[in-house]
Image (cartoon, rainbow, N blue to C red; front, side):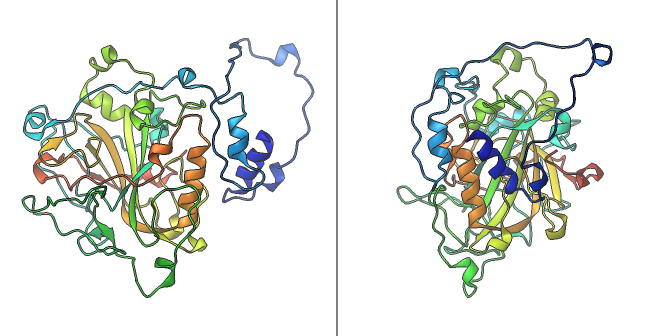
Length: 384
C-alpha cells in the first residue's frame, strides 16, 4: 500500500510520470575497483505504531493504512516534539530598541520600512540553497501582507473586506469565536459561479469558496529535513527541531535571518478545477504562465498571527520573508488535497487544517527598511 500511495502521488504531479510507475531493470553489482571507499553505515530505526487515525478517503484509504503503519510512531518518538524555544510576545516599544522588525509588512514594490536595520539582509537565494526545508504549512483568513492593487482595502469577498489601516481605528471588537481577518484580493465576483458554488470539503476545516487566504510555508535549516518528522505543528517545533536554547542565544540576527525563512502566497479560492495544483505542501507555487511566484518581495520580519498587533509584537525576529506580491486563484480541491497531505504526515497537523486569524498590518515604524524586489536568482524554481 505504501508503494501504491507513492504511485498515486506520482500520478498527481504536473509532469507525466507514467514511465516510472513500473520497476526498471537493475544494473549488475559494481566491481570493487569502481566503488568509492567513503561508505557511511547507519543503524536501523525502529518505529512504533501510532494511535489510530480516522479514515476519510474512499478505497484505498491511505489514512486508514497510515494508522497501522510501523513508520508512524507515538509522540515520544517524534524528534521535533516540544522543540519550540519559548520567546514570549513583548510590547512593541521594547522590541523596537532591540531592532526586531515585524511582519506582515507592506510589500508593494518600492516600499521602504521605517526601521533602519543596518546591514541586516533577507535571504534572497532559494531557501533550499541555504539548506532550508519547509517544516509546516498553514494559512490565515484574509491577508496579513499588503500589496497595492492586489490585496488591499479595495478587494472583496463573500463577507466584504477590512478598511485601509490608519493605525488608530483598525482595532475592532470580535464576536466570540470569530477569527480576525485581513485584506482581500480583487478577483471575487458574486455573479460568477466559481466564486459562489459551495465545495464539499473533506479534509480542510471551516474553509469557504470565494474567500482570500494567505498561505505560509515556514522553512528552517535546523528542521528535520528529509525525514518523517520534517513537517510539524506547531511550526515552531519544526523550525527549532535541531537547535537548543543555549546555541540559539549565541546566534546573531543575520545568522537567524539566513537560516529561517517563510514563503508567503495569497489565493482566492474558486470552485473550478482548471486552477488545480496537486502539491501545496512544499512551498510557494511557481507557474510562469500564470505569473505565480514571479513578483516576489524579500525582507526581514517576524512571526505573525492575531496574538500580535502594533502594541504587542513578536520576539521571533528577524526571519526572512519571501512573499508573492500578486494574488492568484486556486481551486478548493487544491486546498483539500493539501489538507489530506497534512493528515498523512507523521506529526498531528490537525491544528493547522483551518484558517488562522490575521495580524493587523504592521505599522511603518516597525517594518524593516531592507525590502528587496525580484532579485535575479529568483527566476529559478523556489522549491528545488
